[in-house]
Amino acid sequence: MINVGIIGSGFIGPAHIEALRRLGNINVVAICDVSQSAAQACAAKLNVPHAYSDVALFLQHEGLQAVHNCTPNHLHSAINRQIIRAGKHVFSEKPLCMTMDEARELVALAEQAGVVHGVSFVYRQFAMVQQAASMVSHQQLGRLFSAQGSYMQDWMLEETDYNWRVDAEKGGASRAMADIGSHWCDTIQFVTGRKIVEVMADLSIVWPTRKASLGSAATFGAQGGETQYQSRDVTTEDMGSVLFRFDDGSKGCFSVSQVSAGRKNRLNLEVNGSLGALAWDQEIPQQLWLGHRQKANQLLSDDPSLMNPDVADRARFPGGHIEGWPDAFRAMMQQFYLAVSEGKPPAQQSATFATFHEGAQVMAIVEAIVQSHQQQRWVRVSA
Image (cartoon, rainbow, N blue to C red; front, side, top):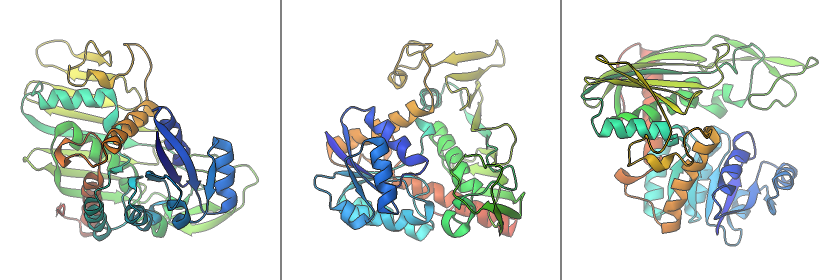
């Protein structure tokens, strides 16, 4: 059994715990949160034996081997640094940190410490995304020349929708692009095997002022009728569109929005090649659309017997058995803990999960997107 601790018990912390427990060889031994009462409440609810409110004490917990950082964005850098310096394997929610200087430092620290390091880019773990990447790598689409897509949500549609992510000091200078655009960028780079190296962006704030609840409101939660509000200025984008160039000269575009009514969590992508095309939609994750010129289009399902042999095992059950986001999350944890079991990070080119290297590279894309919007020009993604 591998002893694991969780820092942060908001929306995503319990999701980590649920996925970890499905692996069978993980023992979640402790939770750390902003206060002792909050930590104890979460620990009691999820049957975790120990609760802490001090990160330093938490990291001294006997036998602790790996730590998941599930805190708000502005705490990621300092806590990731503490985890690494304590010699623990570290799995961080994205973004990895708030600035590229912090990202480069964390990559260097993790590599020097020899700990396994991961970032929570989950969509590459879906079976049909694995299939898409396999088809591209085996040149089943021919020569790739474009990619496009979007990531649409509606949880920030109304003026009264507000949480810590809206505050640039806690969430960062970018919101929609950093929060969900980062997922799209990681997924398309994984599928194509190419890196985004240049961007041209146009971002938009739909609600320059939002009404923040004076009470507590959970992410993706609904407000009650008696809620009292306070007006808050908004400096982070609600939506945006990006033209981009890959490192091989091929091109693409994508849009993100957190204000698209009816779209709950719709990440979709399409890749076009000289022999065919493919498309995937996260809200119908077990289907991969295959486009053809000279014959009827196809819908491929995640039946292991129909998938490419090198990725067939990424569909855990026979065809027709529903697998979705929690299963992809479990797969991400499984890949990370295979490396933890070996006691060292995998070689960068052979990692089956997103590491701090990918976390830093996607941060560089988001930083370039923000700069491009501000300066209204093409911007090169920093190395």
